[in-house]
Image (tube, rainbow, N blue to C red; front, top):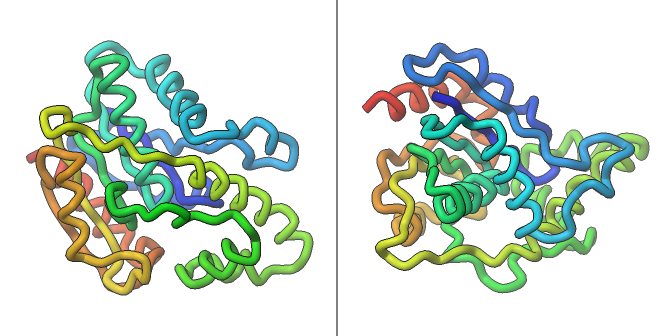
Length: 232
């Protein structure tokens, strides 16, 4: 079984490298998917709208997964929306949905209000600071900010064009696992069950001490949950 991991807005795939260090009973390969625009030279390679972004990822999976190969998706924050919509596209276009989708630090798409994402730096930077976990980048020197901020704002511009897929009850995806920080300022735990509008079942729901980037102190536990959830 393969696991493909999608990072948060402004994030780099190596933030999730701890997932590759785990010992898994079923997962034999882990791909840390790197979004376009992570170097000084390829910002223009980022698709201009969400649908084109998902199409690019779906095409990559279709080209790299073998027919009928079992796989799971993991996404944190923006990556959770990427994982969900990629799963929808893989199911609809190729009848090859993931066995399981791990959704970390994200509210259900059906709860998104219009205008929730705003790439205006005057709005986006305070929003991201409020989430926590990126202070070292958002408060860094000018050289670092000149590299990081355009990447983060490009990702939020993509999210501005995101129109969630709200499937009919009979077209929901098979199963998901929810993970989130207990102090995440953008989540309400009572809303998390609304992921059932998108999935037939929630296979597991796990809360952790900490905020939006609770992952920083829970590497071993996250790996253990992924292993357990993929064998039962």
